Image (cartoon, rainbow, N blue to C red; front, side, top):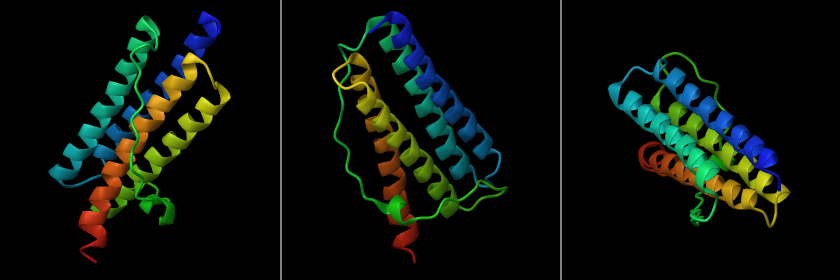
Amino acid sequence: MTKDKFNEVIDFAVDGEKEAVTFYQDLQKKVKFSAQKEMLKELENMEKGHIIILENIRSRGTQEVTVKEVTDLHISDYLIDVKPYDEMDYQDILIVAMKREEKAQKLYTNMAKQYTGTELEKIFLKLASEEAAHKLQFETLYDDHVLKEN
């Protein structure tokens, strides 16, 4: 694989993570409780962390990339997308976040399939795993605070 192609794919992934940062920053303006803002700020920071991971991979290569297995509770499979709105409630914040992470995970998984046997496959599988971990975090919160309370 050429260095240009490698950088092109890293740029694509970085742009996606930057979009996620902006998404969570915008969502912070739509919630009313400080705990919700803190959770969204944490997500913003996780996405910023992905940008750092990608830039490190760009400069150092993929030798240090490890992909973790992540449990999938499949809660988001049964939920309908919610569009962000002003003063969102906790349940809708979790749904928006779960669905976003689910879509990112699927995107990275599909990208990995396009580069089977290459460094890029490892990168995309790593990113898919990271997004799956975020999704699991939201699914667990949803299970603990929405499903069990209803």
